[in-house]
Image (cartoon, rainbow, N blue to C red):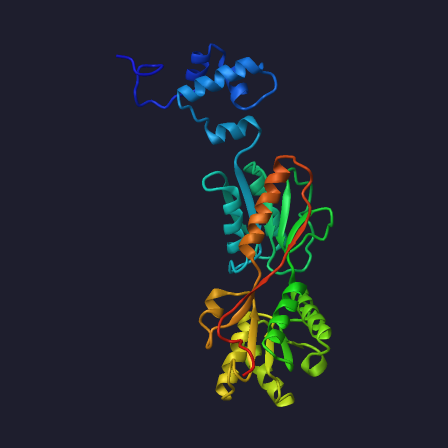
Length: 343
């Protein structure tokens, strides 16, 4: 007894089966299913009805190849530890949809020659587009040479304003941090941060100074305490701040690692956190913030949302929609135990 177009109950129906049932050629059936204009409406209707009757699901890769696509995207990063690239990748994959797009992840290690090699390799695999993730928020040169596919820059913007760049609002993040401390009733606020050569450090300091100025205040010491991005600097800077400004009642730290060093020194010196001094970090790095003593309030940069936006912008560019524009994402305060209102 025949149970299907070729007599098999379990065989997956093919485009040939659909064409045979609809009474058209395979080429016409393919054009109808993929929405090509050359097919008459009545013919398209007949083909789609046949496909539905047979429960035919066109292969995603085949559909892509018909449109000249491979269903692959390259993600190029210089972030060795994955601190920024991993959440951005997760957000981008969410935007792409589970199983819909394959992502090739390449680490350029901050080396321009290695980056060019990876770009050539990705293009040889016929990727449909590229997402380039920086390890810092300073503008970077656009990819070298003529790139035949759309490119979206994430975290670190391209120096070319015509490129699509999805970035973090570090100025707004600095403002958020200080506004949170002000809402806790803090008025004597110091800012300990990383290297002055980093755009992120300068932007976060600018936001903090603007929020203080709006409240009629200024930073303790009149300027940020610039140093390195690690706990060692946080410990040393906390001692300097306490020696110079014994009345300090809050510290905004430019990174969570700095903040953990600050918390260690305050604990060693017997200072009450958050009762006497509130401390807020930046990055919301779970491995650091959630395991600090006390647990660290921090500014989250919404990197997964940023990655999802990068994915959506790349899709739009691949589809040839209206040219997508650059976008900047605000941060948010993640409350934990290191900040609290003044008693």
